[in-house]
Length: 254
Ligand code: BMP
Image (cartoon, rainbow, N blue to C red; front, side, top):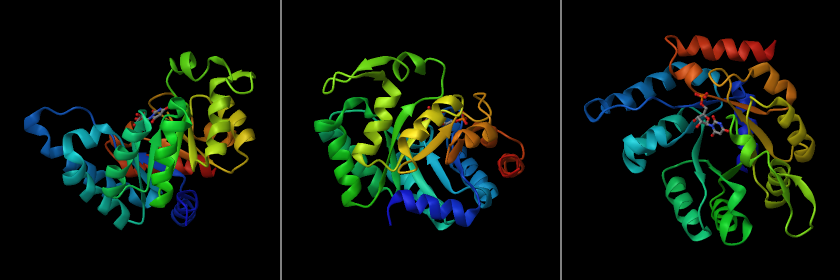
C-alpha cells in the first residue's frame, strides 16, 4: 500500500486528519534529556486524536536520528500512527538520495522535500529510493509564513513550455507529474489550498500547517480542501494537549 493510502487509512481509522508536529523550543545541554520525555508524554496524551506525527530538526538535532529518533518513531508506529520526516530536502540528487535513505532506515514512512531543485539530478533520485522502499514523498508547494509570497508566490516562465504561471501552480503540477503522495500548502492561505486542490483532483493530498499559532483556521483550511492539518505549538505547548487536539477535531467535525 502506498503512503498516500496508508495516510487515508490512518485518518479513517483514527477518525482524524490531524498530523501532530512534535516540535519543542531549544533546550540548553543540561536540559536536553527532557526533550525525549516531553515528546513521549505528549504522544501518550494525544495519540488517540491524530493520524500521523511530523518530526522536524527540532527533534533530530538534539536527539540524534539513530538514538532517540528511531526509538520515538518505533513508539509512533506502535501507536498505529505514521511518521513523517520534515527534512525539506533541497540538495543535488545524489545527496537527496542518501539523506532519504538514512531517514527511511530510521523508520520514517514519508519525507518532505523542496521541489525547487527540479527533477533530473534533483528530486528524481529521492523519488526512486522512496518508490523502491515503498515510502512517501510530500512536496512543499506554498509555505505558510508571510515571506513565502516572495518565492512560492512569484510568477515564473516555464523553461520548457514558455508558459507564465505562479511558482506554486508549477509546483502543484510537478507534484502530480512526479507522483508525489502529497503537497504542503499553508493553512494561512485557504485560497491557495482551493486553487491547488483543483489541480491535484485528490491524486495527491494537501497537508496544511500553520493552524493556531501562525493564524490559520482549522475549519477554513479543511473547507478550502486540505486533507490533513499539521498542528504543532498549539498542542505541544498547551497545558492540556489532548484537550486542544480534541477541540480542533471537534471544530472541523462540526
Ligand atoms: P506550528 O503549528 O507550531 O506553527 O508548527 C508547524 C510545523 O509545520 C513546524 O514544524 C513548521 O516548521 C512546519 N511548516 C510550517 O509551519 N509551514 C510550512 O509551510 C511548512 C512546514 O513544514
